[in-house]
Amino acid sequence: MDLASAYRSRRVAIVGAGNVGSTLAQRIAEKNLADVVLLDVVEGRPQGLALDLLEASGLVGHHRQIIGTNDYADTADSDIVVITAGLPRKPGMSRDDLLQVNGKIVLEVARQAIAYSPQARFVVVTNPLDVMVYLVWKATGLPSQQVMGMAGVLDSARFQTFISLELKVPPQDVSAMVLGGHGDLMVPLPQYSTVCGIPIPELLDQATVERLCDRTRHGGAEIVGLLQRGGAYSAPSAAIYKMVEAILLNQSRILPASAYLEGQYGLQDLYLGVPCRVGWPGVEEILELRLTDAEHDLLQRSGDFVKVRTEQVLQQLM
Ligand SMILES: NC(=O)C1=CN([C@@H]2O[C@H](COP(=O)(O)OP(=O)(O)OC[C@H]3O[C@@H](n4cnc5c(N)ncnc54)[C@H](O)[C@@H]3O)[C@@H](O)[C@H]2O)C=CC1
Ligand SMILES: O=C([O-])CC(=O)C(=O)O
Image (cartoon, rainbow, N blue to C red; front, side, top):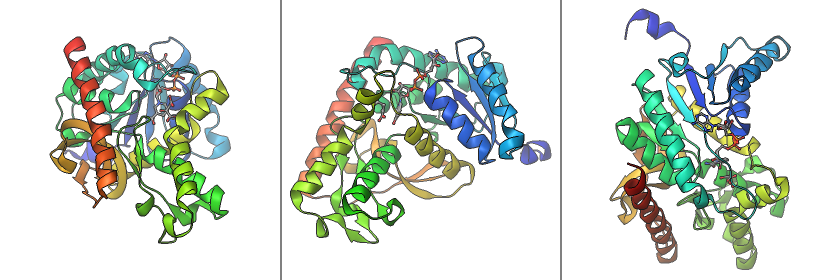
């Protein structure tokens, strides 16, 4: 690495300047984490959002460059590319209903973005998440550790919130863990979810634990149903921020991420939510937790579901 690139500001490209992408841009700039390039197909939208964010910089006290663009050349040499481009679901739809339409979008986005940032780490957000991450990995040709998906951090944050509300304890005292695909078959893990180190099955009866797990599994749909137009973006952008920060600051944090499995948990050749060590290389390590037979079976079911859809879409789109 030459001196100029060693000292240049870190840059995050966010492709898709919608609700999630623009809220993420604001979080990154306001926390002074990195410069941001916001790209969208809609002309004027990323430029307008970037200018608006820039005009707040003196008020909130950051000094980050924020560029809004429709041209991938402006994303050149990004350290991280976050893909939030694509359609959100409508009430009554499942995330998988977006498979075809969003599959085409993320393939196009990944091919264009990698051409300008061949060393980048990719964090995929577009739904249906785990299948979209696989497509981005294929389209970029990057080592699998540099391509990951964000969902587990969000699902775990929802579980954390519901536990904190139920037990009337501050959320920061709660640590929660959710694995599996980002869909109705996700696998909340009560025995690995704790309040100050105490596993929640010690504090709540089984029916209550199951109710909180169920609310977590349908956490995205709950918000889609309430908003009626589009989905959640505040918690999702906070969750993406956490992953982007872990990479840029090389934090080696243990986070649930959609990562490429090569035999871990008995699963092969798919992206699925598992606990990972996340740092500058991307996914540095996948941790294999000891699961009960029931949890193991649920993870297999979730993995099988994602794998079938991944194979379908690969045949259709690649
Ligand atoms: N993984 C997760 O946990 C979460 C995933 N999502 C997903 O993220 C995606 C974005 O959600 P929102 O921001 O709420 O949607 P949105 O509709 O507000 O924004 C999407 C943006 O993508 C842009 N876009 C569409 N095609 C594009 C292309 N080819 N190139 C560049 N930009 C393009 C649109 O113009 C729009 O501005 C959805 O698929 C949603 O389901 C949302 C929340 C959480
Ligand atoms: O539910 C959706 O469509 C958006 C999403 O993935 C979430 O909020 O978990």
